[in-house]
Amino acid sequence: MSRTPTYNILMYSHDTYGLGHIRRTMAIASQLMEPHVNILILTGSPIAGRFSFPEQIDFVRIPGMIKKTNEEYLPLSIKINAQHALNIRKNIITATAKTFQPHLFIVDKEPLGLKKEVLPTLQWLRRCQPNTQTILGLRDIMDDRHSVRQDWNKKGIYDILDTLYSEIWVYGNREFYDPIEEYAIPACISRKMVFTGYIPRKMPSESQIQRTRKDQGLQNGEKLIVVTTGGGGDGYCVMDAYLSMLERENRPLPIKNVLITGPFMPKQDRKKVFKRARKLGVRTYHFYRNMEKLLAAADLVVSMGGYNTICELLSLGTLPLIVPRDTPRKEQLIRAKIFHRNQLVDYIPWHQCGAERLREKVFALLESPGAIAGAISRFQMTGISSMQGRLKAFRGLESINTCNQTIQAENGKRLKDKRLAFDIRKAI
Image (cartoon, rainbow, N blue to C red):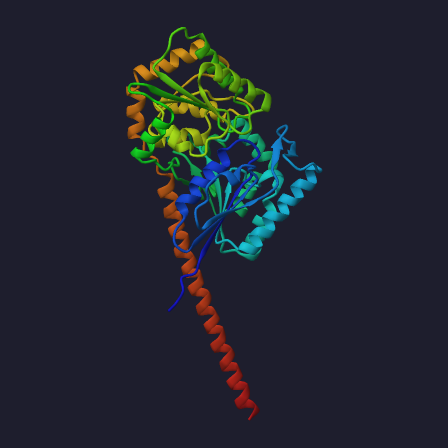
């Protein structure tokens, strides 16, 4: 009986800052998992081990790097020269690809990887495994048009997309934001682009949601507000504004509040948040493992405007109040404006996020959620089904390639046998 061959998917997530890249990669991996599919994730996230990896999915940890400036990165933990750390990362990535021999290689966000660390792997795959499908996965918005065009021209990204990538998956709706127009992408590249739609998240069961609300101590009629800033590296000002809002209240509110600082919030800032929250009787966490259950249990979530957080909230049907940062990139602000225009979120500009403005927005959403809640319920998130369709097409193509290789091998063997028989007759 013939044995079904395995199909290997290698995913790269550079993860220099925050939780967004690894969370998006995990969400995609968990949905691409099928019988006879192996998925291996290359990640620089220092907290990758805290996530639960299902069977058939594993990860290779490369040394973490932290962004100091737009062009300078330093080792996150080990105290060695930055270039040495980058060389280690590059060698691990290349060696993993050569050993794992992926049928599909998905690169998250950065076409060349951090400091071009993925380039040797892409070149090797094109040269030695030309049947491997190489995919660049882009979030809906990278940055404002001027910054992206300037950066891509400077780094030669347009040529890389043309020569080293089979397809480009855009995790968004072209009707919301069109990167082909915004980033001046030429026709030779735009033909490779697949707009998957936004990536949904797994919805917890109703019993899990109710258990989470009970665990958070909610009584009848009380609302749950969750405040989260992702990794938390630059989220203190949002936490500060929200705590200031609570500190100004001179009457008890029918609200339970939960704050998640994130694992990358500076230690001194995190201590201040925990100290103030304790005085208010507010539960605070450094890291929350089952985040989707908490977000689904919430009546309102106050967060920054990262791609993954917004996708999670829309998937779960939870009201979002977004405070998008506008530096070093404007992508969160652009996304917040677009989603607000489509009545899917409300938002407060970063520099207007004070206690009074927060209070005004929070209570307006809790008292009149109708328009946003209705728009969220109608919003279609097609990202996973689109990618599953592409995987099915690739696996079909792989079967054809394997079949053709078998036929070619058999034809070569027959030709060799005929030549051998002819040489024997000639010798006789």
